[in-house]
Length: 116
Length: 110
Image (cartoon, each protein chain N blue to C red):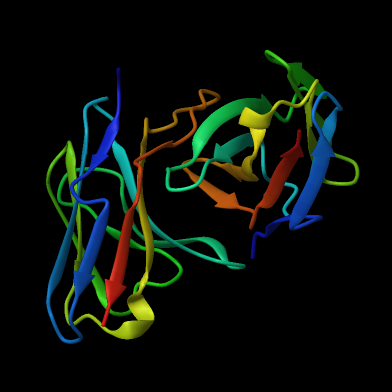
């Protein structure tokens, strides 16, 4: 069964800590994404990557960075965690669309991060 | 910019009835749409998709309708079951990126 795996389901971190969220996919997808999901705000794109070592800012990149050293792994880094980064974080991946070919995203189960 | 939204944040239906969840989008460049289901504590799961050259697509108990004229799509669930209780949201986009609505929480009443 193909999947996107996020390393932790629940995390509790202290303000100021550096936090790493890991995501691994086994579908040989080129594209990978990090979203945060908050009540009433839906999914907001933090960063995405179309290829190894490539990264693009999404809508809310402030306070975050990413790393994609291997095709199957996309890491989200909170440089100095703050309480307003308490959220559900979702990783997703997809094939790179070419021409009329289309594919949707496959999501991980999410990491619920609480910053205290 | 692009926006994708849903009409109602919550919807309650009786078990066995049909459910209709609506979604509107703003950018006519969107050419591919997906409906996702998200159960509590889980990531979103793909339900059904539709391309902009289609008006209707059917799956198992689900139908998606696309009206490009008014930039609207809907998800119909036939004979709604308790296991259908979840948050449903649409996504629309083009090229390699999608924009997501905020979701409708569907509650099925036994």
